[in-house]
Image (cartoon, helix red, strand yellow):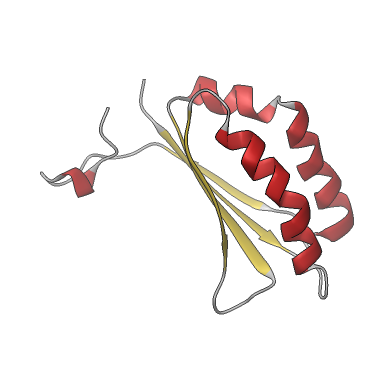
Length: 108
């Protein structure tokens, strides 16, 4: 099965970004231990520091589904209720291998 890429954009309420990052740190660390997690990185938008962006890479859709059922993901639900300025934007993608170099695909 094809690898899955997820981009999740979180717009954090004014004044709560540092707290949000502190609360997300254990979630990131726990996710790194999950089977099927190839990459799970939290970024901050350089043009809007109140926007945080997860870029995730999973071995399969099944690995992503399992991730979403983990107890530490409840922390993200808590964060959404107390710190998000708007609903998260989540995009789930499968790669289109275009080009001939490794830069054109995730590999298998």
